[in-house]
Image (cartoon, rainbow, N blue to C red; front, side, top):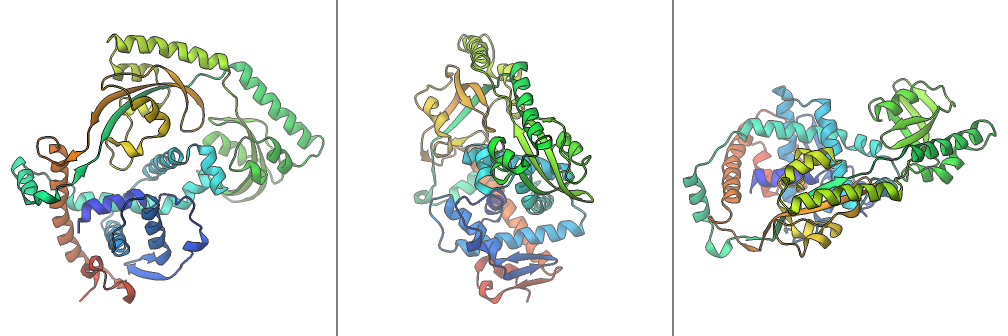
Length: 450
């Protein structure tokens, strides 16, 4: 078994939302393993198996056993991390939750569609995954401590490659490296005033004329997650919401409606339903100021100028990104799109969003698309320039063209051996119980205490 490579894949997918998967079909609560003070439920395993199937591609016959073994590894890493005081901070967990949510949003199309699909706001989804993300980050950190500082020499890379049967060399699919400059126009003061006035009118109807807050939310709120439910956010805790929203919420008395609150999402009025210490049951109505056509045209004219500089080599792409893109995360990567699974800029063609592939498909390497209108990940109107930095064709793995990949595989193989030895030593120091139905899984054999 490739411990390290497969383990990293499970870290990336184990909290992925299974679109179209019924919660009822996964409601299996049987404990199938205990590692120290950590348990594995059969439902946990079934969720990950469902996610593997949802991703498409060939499913190994022993997929359930493989996943189970990797879950055991994760629990063992977390258990030992707690004993060795290898911890992660709340800020690290929050950052990772944001990254995962952005990935989910990208998969389903927009923040609004994600919230609408699950009938709950992003903050509630994040809270449901907080413990799992904490465990994952902690296990990653412990794994890094155990086997992370491994280096391989060119000779080891060549020896690893030579061990692979020539008729079993894997096929590397076509990959692209794509950059983007996204400019989101600033919302005009007129649009902001229109949004605030609309919200003031809604509040007046609620407070002065006694109309139902819930009905007004259903009619006018632009939060697709809570709007259809009468603005209901459920029970929220301090730290769940953006600071401006939270500060206004916890000043309210039961039944009270707030003044207009501005956040990065727009303008809100908030109703406190009930408070229990640092938790509150609340509802809100959101009105988002809209970009006007003139604002978008102005943004496009700005990127038209940038496009001219780029094609005439008057400015480097990375510098143009730092000066003109509205996406702060994009600046960190020099404007290059990142594969969330691998953490690299190499994107498999099959995973590229259709609206991006439409422009990139016929472009030559080193070229730029003309500025065009698009939607940001959170559904805002924007203008974008795309850049094709590199394109690879499908080919068999080779030292000449894929040395970096081979170096990574060689390193993983070396880490596998280190991690396996660590498991043998650590299992004896922890209480481990495995359900008889899973004791025959090859991946679980190392965890069965003799």
